[in-house]
Length: 267
Image (tube, rainbow, N blue to C red):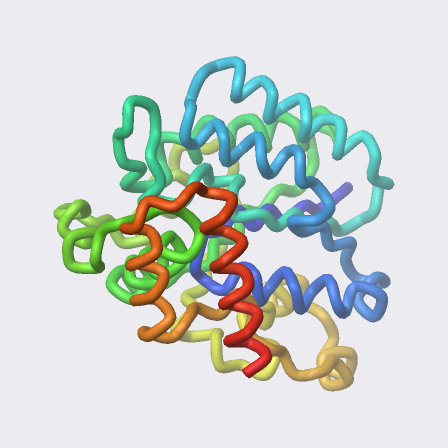
């Protein structure tokens, strides 16, 4: 029987660090798990994100078709991990149809989750062992990190206080995960908070390695984790906000931001 762990985010909960660590150590971990992250299923991941912003039925079907193609291309390994935060839809703070704000995950994550479960059962059989594993974060640090990401990635022109006020009933990511999981036809759900796992030697991946029961002697030989997709400092964030408000076209703005991020990283 195949065991599949689905890690559908959430965004800004250490997902990039987890995915980077697992990918870099894939060869050592290969006897225990086959890990597939963002680069493995770009089409399915993008289709899920688009559905989160444009929840038309044909967008959901496009996601399922992309996921089916990906699953058909991989071998029948005993333990598989699929990790992509867009499997819960678009990051809150993005805009949906008619400019409406994405405020939580449930609207998109439940239909996407049903399709993921159905696709896995169709590929590996009705008795496939499915676990949904959510990485979480305390609400206020999470929404602050979401804001920082959006300032550098899209034309967001709100300052943080204005942005935060758009989420008067901000839902705790833990409550969102519990609500989503309760509506899916699965029995195994695991969660881990970034505040509890972020400082571990293996970083956020430590919770996944625990879930996989990777032997301690193997883990001792793994390198220490490095943080991935780290947010910009306040000065650079202020520059990005000013640039967003200046009304430059998207392509020019992205190039300038990418250059500034590279220079900040090199510095």
